Length: 288
Image (cartoon, rainbow, N blue to C red; front, top):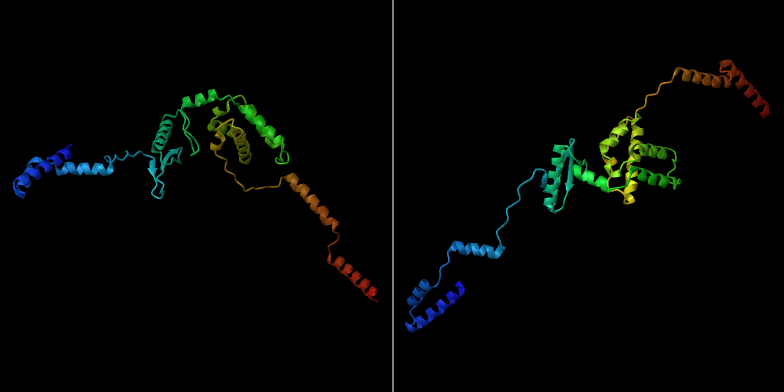
Protein backbone atom coordinates (compact mmCIF):
# COMPACT_ATOMS: atom_id res chain seq x y z
CA UNK A 1 0.00 0.00 0.00
CA UNK A 2 2.81 2.42 0.85
CA UNK A 3 4.58 1.53 -2.41
CA UNK A 4 1.50 2.40 -4.49
CA UNK A 5 1.11 5.68 -2.65
CA UNK A 6 4.75 6.53 -3.29
CA UNK A 7 4.38 5.84 -7.01
CA UNK A 8 1.33 8.09 -7.19
CA UNK A 9 3.17 10.89 -5.40
CA UNK A 10 6.20 10.60 -7.72
CA UNK A 11 4.04 10.79 -10.87
CA UNK A 12 2.21 13.84 -9.48
CA UNK A 13 5.53 15.49 -8.61
CA UNK A 14 6.83 15.04 -12.17
CA UNK A 15 3.72 16.62 -13.65
CA UNK A 16 4.03 19.58 -11.30
CA UNK A 17 7.70 19.90 -12.12
CA UNK A 18 6.91 20.12 -15.84
CA UNK A 19 4.24 22.76 -15.17
CA UNK A 20 6.76 24.78 -13.11
CA UNK A 21 9.29 24.80 -15.91
CA UNK A 22 11.46 21.87 -14.79
CA UNK A 23 12.66 23.26 -11.44
CA UNK A 24 14.35 20.52 -9.42
CA UNK A 25 13.77 22.27 -6.11
CA UNK A 26 10.00 22.00 -6.58
CA UNK A 27 10.34 18.25 -7.28
CA UNK A 28 12.48 17.69 -4.19
CA UNK A 29 10.13 19.64 -1.97
CA UNK A 30 7.11 17.75 -3.25
CA UNK A 31 8.72 14.35 -2.72
CA UNK A 32 9.79 15.19 0.84
CA UNK A 33 6.31 16.32 1.74
CA UNK A 34 4.30 13.60 -0.01
CA UNK A 35 6.25 10.30 0.12
CA UNK A 36 5.65 8.46 3.41
CA UNK A 37 8.79 8.07 5.45
CA UNK A 38 9.99 4.75 6.86
CA UNK A 39 12.39 4.75 9.79
CA UNK A 40 15.72 3.01 9.39
CA UNK A 41 15.02 0.68 12.30
CA UNK A 42 11.75 -0.55 10.84
CA UNK A 43 13.40 -1.01 7.46
CA UNK A 44 16.24 -3.04 9.01
CA UNK A 45 13.81 -5.33 10.84
CA UNK A 46 11.76 -5.80 7.68
CA UNK A 47 14.93 -6.59 5.71
CA UNK A 48 16.05 -9.18 8.30
CA UNK A 49 12.68 -10.88 8.28
CA UNK A 50 12.62 -10.97 4.50
CA UNK A 51 15.98 -12.78 4.52
CA UNK A 52 15.51 -15.18 7.42
CA UNK A 53 11.75 -15.53 7.26
CA UNK A 54 11.39 -15.33 11.07
CA UNK A 55 13.33 -14.60 14.19
CA UNK A 56 15.97 -17.12 15.29
CA UNK A 57 14.55 -19.55 17.89
CA UNK A 58 16.03 -19.63 21.34
CA UNK A 59 18.39 -22.51 22.11
CA UNK A 60 16.83 -25.22 24.33
CA UNK A 61 17.52 -25.13 28.03
CA UNK A 62 20.35 -27.49 28.98
CA UNK A 63 19.36 -30.76 30.67
CA UNK A 64 21.80 -32.67 32.83
CA UNK A 65 22.80 -35.89 31.14
CA UNK A 66 21.67 -34.82 27.64
CA UNK A 67 24.51 -33.62 25.41
CA UNK A 68 26.09 -33.59 21.97
CA UNK A 69 29.60 -34.78 21.30
CA UNK A 70 32.06 -32.36 19.78
CA UNK A 71 33.72 -35.12 17.72
CA UNK A 72 30.41 -36.29 16.21
CA UNK A 73 29.63 -34.32 13.02
CA UNK A 74 26.16 -35.88 12.70
CA UNK A 75 24.80 -33.74 15.53
CA UNK A 76 23.32 -36.73 17.39
CA UNK A 77 22.00 -36.36 20.94
CA UNK A 78 23.18 -38.61 23.75
CA UNK A 79 21.74 -39.42 27.17
CA UNK A 80 23.68 -40.70 30.17
CA UNK A 81 23.01 -41.51 33.81
CA UNK A 82 24.41 -43.76 36.52
CA UNK A 83 22.79 -46.98 37.69
CA UNK A 84 24.38 -48.54 40.78
CA UNK A 85 27.61 -46.71 40.05
CA UNK A 86 27.73 -47.83 36.41
CA UNK A 87 27.53 -45.20 33.66
CA UNK A 88 24.84 -45.94 31.06
CA UNK A 89 25.03 -44.11 27.70
CA UNK A 90 22.58 -44.21 24.80
CA UNK A 91 22.32 -42.42 21.45
CA UNK A 92 19.01 -41.02 20.11
CA UNK A 93 20.11 -39.54 16.80
CA UNK A 94 18.69 -36.06 16.23
CA UNK A 95 15.70 -36.62 18.53
CA UNK A 96 16.61 -34.49 21.54
CA UNK A 97 13.16 -34.87 23.09
CA UNK A 98 13.53 -38.65 23.27
CA UNK A 99 16.91 -38.29 25.00
CA UNK A 100 15.46 -35.88 27.58
CA UNK A 101 12.47 -38.15 28.24
CA UNK A 102 14.72 -41.20 28.60
CA UNK A 103 17.14 -39.69 31.10
CA UNK A 104 14.45 -37.97 33.19
CA UNK A 105 12.39 -41.16 33.44
CA UNK A 106 15.43 -43.22 34.42
CA UNK A 107 16.40 -40.75 37.14
CA UNK A 108 12.87 -40.61 38.51
CA UNK A 109 12.71 -44.40 38.77
CA UNK A 110 16.14 -44.50 40.38
CA UNK A 111 15.09 -41.91 42.95
CA UNK A 112 11.73 -43.49 43.81
CA UNK A 113 12.85 -47.10 43.55
CA UNK A 114 9.58 -48.12 41.86
CA UNK A 115 10.12 -49.73 38.50
CA UNK A 116 13.00 -50.98 36.40
CA UNK A 117 16.12 -48.90 35.79
CA UNK A 118 18.26 -50.38 32.98
CA UNK A 119 21.91 -51.15 33.55
CA UNK A 120 22.81 -51.18 29.86
CA UNK A 121 21.90 -49.10 26.83
CA UNK A 122 19.71 -51.93 25.52
CA UNK A 123 17.40 -51.76 28.51
CA UNK A 124 14.28 -49.62 28.72
CA UNK A 125 13.21 -47.79 31.91
CA UNK A 126 9.77 -48.98 32.97
CA UNK A 127 7.49 -47.94 35.80
CA UNK A 128 5.82 -50.41 38.13
CA UNK A 129 2.53 -50.05 36.26
CA UNK A 130 4.22 -50.74 32.94
CA UNK A 131 5.81 -53.86 34.38
CA UNK A 132 2.49 -55.07 35.77
CA UNK A 133 0.72 -54.37 32.48
CA UNK A 134 3.32 -56.27 30.48
CA UNK A 135 3.16 -59.17 32.95
CA UNK A 136 -0.62 -59.36 32.68
CA UNK A 137 -0.78 -59.11 28.91
CA UNK A 138 1.94 -61.73 28.37
CA UNK A 139 0.85 -65.35 28.80
CA UNK A 140 4.21 -67.00 28.02
CA UNK A 141 5.50 -68.87 31.04
CA UNK A 142 9.06 -69.82 31.88
CA UNK A 143 8.07 -73.48 31.63
CA UNK A 144 7.13 -73.01 27.97
CA UNK A 145 10.46 -71.39 27.17
CA UNK A 146 12.31 -74.16 29.02
CA UNK A 147 10.46 -76.86 27.08
CA UNK A 148 11.23 -75.14 23.77
CA UNK A 149 14.96 -74.96 24.47
CA UNK A 150 15.04 -78.53 25.81
CA UNK A 151 13.41 -79.88 22.63
CA UNK A 152 15.84 -77.86 20.54
CA UNK A 153 18.87 -79.30 22.36
CA UNK A 154 17.63 -82.88 22.28
CA UNK A 155 16.76 -82.67 18.58
CA UNK A 156 20.35 -81.78 17.62
CA UNK A 157 22.75 -84.10 19.43
CA UNK A 158 25.38 -83.58 16.77
CA UNK A 159 25.60 -79.88 17.75
CA UNK A 160 24.93 -80.17 21.48
CA UNK A 161 27.32 -82.94 22.47
CA UNK A 162 26.50 -82.63 26.17
CA UNK A 163 23.01 -84.09 26.52
CA UNK A 164 23.20 -84.42 30.30
CA UNK A 165 24.18 -81.17 31.99
CA UNK A 166 22.11 -78.59 30.00
CA UNK A 167 18.83 -80.56 30.42
CA UNK A 168 19.58 -80.90 34.14
CA UNK A 169 20.09 -77.13 34.53
CA UNK A 170 16.98 -76.38 32.49
CA UNK A 171 15.02 -78.71 34.78
CA UNK A 172 16.15 -76.84 37.91
CA UNK A 173 15.20 -73.48 36.36
CA UNK A 174 11.82 -74.85 35.31
CA UNK A 175 11.16 -76.17 38.81
CA UNK A 176 11.95 -72.79 40.41
CA UNK A 177 10.40 -70.32 37.92
CA UNK A 178 8.25 -72.47 35.64
CA UNK A 179 4.84 -71.17 36.78
CA UNK A 180 5.73 -67.48 36.36
CA UNK A 181 5.34 -65.27 33.25
CA UNK A 182 8.61 -64.77 31.46
CA UNK A 183 8.35 -60.97 31.48
CA UNK A 184 7.85 -60.85 35.26
CA UNK A 185 11.29 -62.23 36.13
CA UNK A 186 13.60 -59.50 37.39
CA UNK A 187 17.42 -59.62 37.23
CA UNK A 188 17.83 -59.45 41.01
CA UNK A 189 15.63 -62.54 41.39
CA UNK A 190 17.92 -64.50 39.09
CA UNK A 191 20.99 -63.22 40.96
CA UNK A 192 19.52 -64.20 44.35
CA UNK A 193 18.65 -67.67 43.09
CA UNK A 194 22.15 -68.20 41.71
CA UNK A 195 23.73 -67.08 44.99
CA UNK A 196 21.58 -69.59 46.87
CA UNK A 197 22.76 -72.57 44.84
CA UNK A 198 25.90 -72.97 46.98
CA UNK A 199 27.97 -74.03 43.99
CA UNK A 200 31.38 -73.12 42.64
CA UNK A 201 31.63 -69.81 40.73
CA UNK A 202 32.22 -71.60 37.43
CA UNK A 203 29.09 -73.72 37.96
CA UNK A 204 27.03 -70.66 38.83
CA UNK A 205 28.18 -69.01 35.61
CA UNK A 206 27.00 -72.06 33.65
CA UNK A 207 23.55 -71.78 35.23
CA UNK A 208 23.47 -68.09 34.34
CA UNK A 209 24.39 -68.89 30.72
CA UNK A 210 21.63 -71.50 30.58
CA UNK A 211 19.10 -68.99 31.95
CA UNK A 212 20.14 -66.48 29.29
CA UNK A 213 19.92 -69.14 26.57
CA UNK A 214 16.30 -69.85 27.55
CA UNK A 215 15.33 -66.22 26.96
CA UNK A 216 17.52 -65.86 23.88
CA UNK A 217 15.83 -68.82 22.19
CA UNK A 218 12.45 -67.40 23.17
CA UNK A 219 13.35 -64.10 21.52
CA UNK A 220 14.30 -65.93 18.33
CA UNK A 221 10.79 -67.43 18.29
CA UNK A 222 9.12 -64.04 19.00
CA UNK A 223 7.74 -65.16 22.35
CA UNK A 224 9.56 -62.61 24.54
CA UNK A 225 11.31 -59.30 23.95
CA UNK A 226 13.44 -59.10 27.09
CA UNK A 227 16.29 -61.08 28.60
CA UNK A 228 16.78 -60.24 32.29
CA UNK A 229 19.61 -62.77 32.60
CA UNK A 230 21.81 -60.49 30.48
CA UNK A 231 21.88 -57.92 33.28
CA UNK A 232 23.13 -60.42 35.87
CA UNK A 233 26.87 -60.20 36.47
CA UNK A 234 29.00 -63.31 36.24
CA UNK A 235 31.01 -64.66 39.13
CA UNK A 236 34.71 -63.94 39.19
CA UNK A 237 36.82 -67.05 38.76
CA UNK A 238 40.05 -67.94 40.49
CA UNK A 239 41.91 -70.14 38.02
CA UNK A 240 44.73 -70.91 40.43
CA UNK A 241 44.28 -74.44 41.88
CA UNK A 242 46.25 -75.63 44.93
CA UNK A 243 46.15 -79.42 45.23
CA UNK A 244 47.44 -81.48 48.15
CA UNK A 245 47.69 -85.25 48.36
CA UNK A 246 45.61 -86.92 51.02
CA UNK A 247 47.43 -89.47 53.28
CA UNK A 248 45.72 -92.47 51.67
CA UNK A 249 46.54 -91.09 48.20
CA UNK A 250 50.18 -90.69 49.14
CA UNK A 251 50.32 -94.32 50.38
CA UNK A 252 48.85 -95.66 47.16
CA UNK A 253 51.23 -93.55 45.10
CA UNK A 254 54.26 -94.83 47.05
CA UNK A 255 53.19 -98.43 46.51
CA UNK A 256 52.88 -97.94 42.76
CA UNK A 257 56.25 -96.22 42.57
CA UNK A 258 57.94 -98.96 44.57
CA UNK A 259 56.51 -101.63 42.29
CA UNK A 260 57.85 -99.78 39.28
CA UNK A 261 61.29 -99.53 40.87
CA UNK A 262 61.36 -103.23 41.74
CA UNK A 263 60.36 -104.17 38.21
CA UNK A 264 63.45 -102.45 36.83
CA UNK A 265 65.80 -105.01 38.45
CA UNK A 266 69.10 -104.41 40.29
CA UNK A 267 70.73 -101.05 39.87
CA UNK A 268 74.13 -101.72 41.52
CA UNK A 269 77.45 -101.02 39.87
CA UNK A 270 78.47 -104.66 39.93
CA UNK A 271 75.30 -105.71 38.16
CA UNK A 272 75.76 -103.12 35.48
CA UNK A 273 79.45 -104.10 35.02
CA UNK A 274 78.69 -107.81 34.68
CA UNK A 275 75.95 -107.15 32.19
CA UNK A 276 78.23 -104.94 30.16
CA UNK A 277 81.07 -107.53 30.24
CA UNK A 278 78.73 -110.25 29.13
CA UNK A 279 77.51 -108.12 26.25
CA UNK A 280 81.08 -107.38 25.24
CA UNK A 281 82.16 -111.04 25.25
CA UNK A 282 79.18 -112.16 23.28
CA UNK A 283 79.70 -109.39 20.75
CA UNK A 284 83.42 -110.37 20.49
CA UNK A 285 82.59 -114.04 19.92
CA UNK A 286 79.99 -113.10 17.29
CA UNK A 287 82.53 -111.02 15.39
CA UNK A 288 84.84 -114.02 15.11
